[in-house]
Image (cartoon, rainbow, N blue to C red; front, side):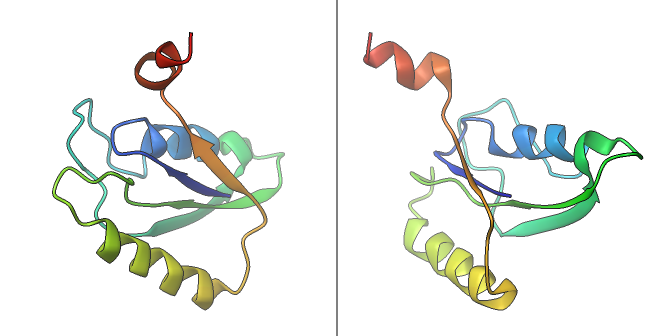
Length: 102
């Protein structure tokens, strides 16, 4: 599962929930916290009776420091190294994005 989305929308928090650990660094700020592509293999939601899952946390798009080209390049390199991704999970903050649609 590769977690992608806009900076500050909760990608790392979502990734932590999926693996049942506080593995990925999080922040309540809208400033970029994740600067590299990181992954972990753990049981689904940390439950010992569940199957293992690989979760990949990525830097946010719309980076607060304008590093999108650098971050996208890192993501592409990572995807080439692992050769496939079964699922892309797009994280969108309800409060900051969906209210614009209502």
